[in-house]
Length: 421
Image (tube, rainbow, N blue to C red; front, side, top):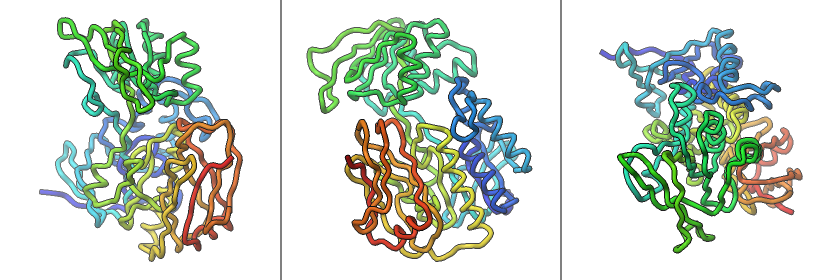
């Protein structure tokens, strides 16, 4: 028998984004908020991120991942927000019916509004097609982080890390501090893909080589375990250069080759996905193309800072509460946001003519520049312009248009975000 119940706002995912969305929804007036989390505790990936560096924007303090999570959990507890752990959501329907399974069995929740904060997952070896032995010692960086920080196991003694994403950089430092030898971090791109501060603090401070324009082309094994990798230089098209191969002996290969938004539930609900981010398409309220289903955090697009994921999720939570309390309103006309000249994508992806208030944009640069002006055009007219220093793809740009500027966007027929000299 399937039990049923009703909630004003259901938040799927109890990580930092989900907690922030639930807190914001409660503060906006939706007192009947429920968080569903498949893990055995709240906090999400932050629980295994024991390094410092979190919270500088949101809490004005430098915190470890567990400390950051604890602050959000305490804020939710102060409000009496209900949550259910060890609860897997198996389906979200377009009518906002949420189907779940837990130790108590299968149950359904009829929600007035849903916020998807399902996070993201790492790309595994199979997604990047590395040739070689299928042997022990190949881990994603996040799996190695859990082994070391949560379970107390060393992933290996001699490591090579493929990919210079932030998790890979942090694990280069972590493995070194635990006594392992990190031979090199290989990056297929001509530049590091992680934050500059992580390159400095995790590689430079520990004399760990960063080999850009390099990749792994083969994995060697001995007695069922990694014994080394064959690395090679890559050309401008990121293809291995014949004759440039060399051996890096190691017993462990960590993969930090990108994160992918968790969109299974969104796809099942019929939510449209963005071709560039891989996450949901949303408007400036962070509502998807299905009324009453909002998306935020890393399932929307992969963030470089947890603070930005939380701030974004607050917008989704507030608007989910307003939707739940006031019901559906006519969306009106939506205008897609075009990206050009140095911008890869923005969130939101479209602006509603029927909405009101200031709009906060998050933009991912597509190229590195010493400086540039971030410009927002409405029907060819610049309505926002701000100079930024040190523009790079690893660092998201975040800026807010005031109400008057946002109103011009809402009445426009064409919106474009770009970087200019």
